[in-house]
Length: 300
Image (cartoon, rainbow, N blue to C red; front, side, top):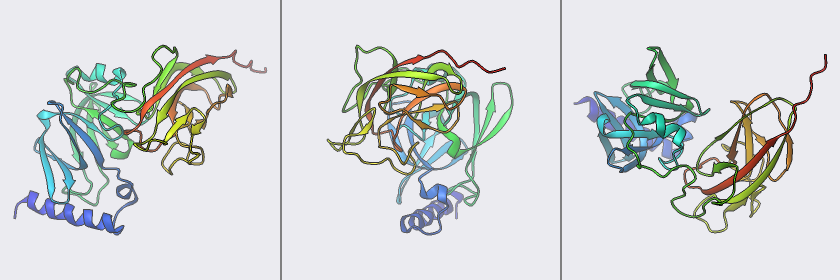
């Protein structure tokens, strides 16, 4: 019996257990292996990543359909955005020869994807799935899959996906407004502004976001018009879905909403986002005018 035949049956059994809610680790139950793979032809394949073996990426599209994709044909593996709304800050470096690893905290690491180890469907299905990545400086890093947002596999083709803020359906952001453009289909957007703990920042927000295909599932900066709360995996589950939220560096998210003056909870770079757990199907976004006020003086 071939190795891949055994893997197919292992993956099929694992998927059946996940469907029943049995025998699945918490990470798998949350769909942490669900990806969108974009090929260099522009075709997208949605499914569950199973393995990388001998230059072939194995994607489980359904119980009876396992796709075997030559790595040379793969442009992008996307865990968070459905291979849409890709920001220029990522696609620019990705057009070079280096592979680009995009962490969920927005850090970019350039180098080379060496291997993907562990996880359901691999030769070590009980092990945690880990990406083995060699940086441009020659350092080998082993990164857990749940920490990864996207992986670009070099020579990213220009024009393969809409830029951040260019919605494929639904709402679009105000074209004439000036400020930080926070696309609803991106987890976090850097403002490029460094703030200090206790410093107040004045916000002025325009725009609206569409959170799903349901016509009434829209939100302003204050949150969902229908008053629905965000899902458990959203940045702020206790707040309204779709509300404007912030984060300092890799710190804990905090609410902004329609407040005009907000004190900063920490020191570092300010990021903005939309309070939603699955941003890939969102459209529209907010244009946010961000005005930091004078930083508080430290007492001697």
